[in-house]
Length: 284
Image (cartoon, rainbow, N blue to C red; front, side, top):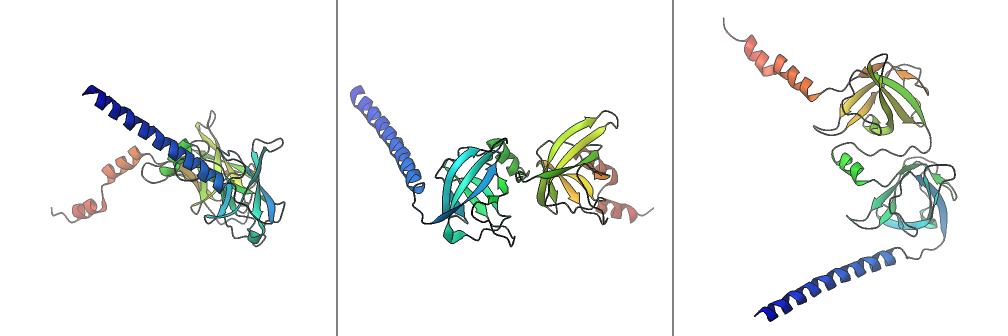
């Protein structure tokens, strides 16, 4: 009785091993076929990323999910802490706006990585030998989890930025790398958060994309939370001054983070509107 059972277990184990081997072989062949698609006449554009993850040469370049080219080369940008990726794009797709965003995506959960291009709205197009200045790098698992909880993705600001300072009495859980938003759109990131030993508050340095250089200098900065338990970010509410913020300026109007304990305390002290209405209509 023991010999048939042993043979059955061995056979089942071999079947499972062969099945996994076949799946691995098919995955490898699929990636190989996908990355060796021939293309006709093409032109080259460059993009720089702070993190390329597992992106490889000959990886697909896609627009709206359609393959339009492939990664030609990956090198370290001279004198910079960034990877320079040269994209070879089919000449049929030569109307890519200059403000388009190049992002490194992953096919499925554990698939190969590729470069996806999201069209911008600029009238000028990227010419052969040009550069896509707006990029989003490959996201580590920690950043993906942060985005799931509402942090949002920050566009890499390789094209240049300017910094402004803002002081808060309470920044909550705000940390370096958090998004800076205006009208809900990410325009930069938090460069640093430190305690000011003189003013005894939190000094936050904001790095803002140079394209957004017309923010009035009387604008307000507030620390908000994405959702109920999401990550915190800085929101800029534009003012009406004719003067604009410049590199090194300080934002005077700020609103600190509201802690959950403060919100609960205010609710318990003030009560809800219905409670006030009932109390006002009570009889003596």
